[in-house]
Amino acid sequence: MSTLVAAAPNPADISQISITDAEFARFRQLIYQVAGIRLSEAKHSLVSGRLTKRLRHYGMASFSDYLKLVTASNENGELQVMVDLLTTNETYFFREQAHFDFLSDTILPAMPSSAALEIWSAACSTGEEVYTLCMLLAKQRGMNSQWRVTGTDISTQVLATARAGQYSLARTRGLPEAYLKAWCLKGVRSAAGMFQIAPDLLARTRFLQLNLNTTLPDIGRFDVIFLRNVMIYFDLDTKRKVVERVVGKLRPGGYLIVGHSESLNGFTCGLRLVRPTIYQLPE
Image 1 (cartoon, helix red, strand yellow):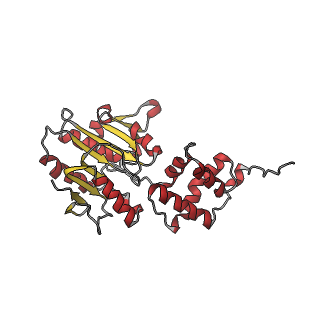
Image 2 (cartoon, one colour):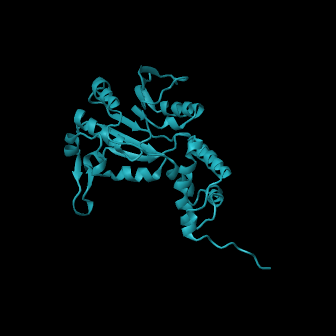
Image 3 (cartoon, helix red, strand yellow):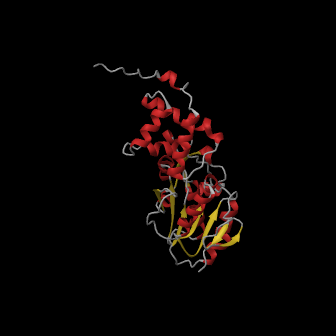
């Protein structure tokens, strides 16, 4: 018996494939289940645009074919690829400056200089927040004291950039010239137009792939946790569960800092409000 097999689509035609409402609904459900991210109806074209490249990669004829691939087994790593493509990662150095001012002016002076300080950037994206924290700590605590900054993100793609600590000079937005000169190396030859975070700062970091929507691994306890500009993608129930997990990693007296467009209205998880977007776990 012969079997009729549909011919693989011409790669040039894949860009013309439209995502159906049913397919979009399934992707929305999947990214919510995996990452807790609630995609709005307005993200229809975003999902289509970002995933079309994967259809092209596999020579697939429909978004349903791709759904079958990412839900069949995670052994091929394609589910993580999908998550990387559908998560938004916008960040820059010293974003929301007031939080770093509070860290420098209030939190750090109150901590014994001899204490080992641990800070967690819980949605670090490409790493600018982590290195901003490192620069502040290097300036205020010095390189002879004990401190470390941990960066985590669900996306393996952005973590690769964060670990490398190399950025385009066009991405110095928010970075004071004095910090750029003190803690960054200007690229030359093949790296022209780039800058590299200094090795001394790189050595004070660690980057881990972590999904805030699942039980958190044992990554230690922290004096300060930055959980900024990620909860805007969560519904209320997911937000509460994420905050509960994250607060479980705070040391007594530690601080949780959220984005300026975020709050913990409706739940506090044992935290007290210090000022808008800044919370503290009582001693």
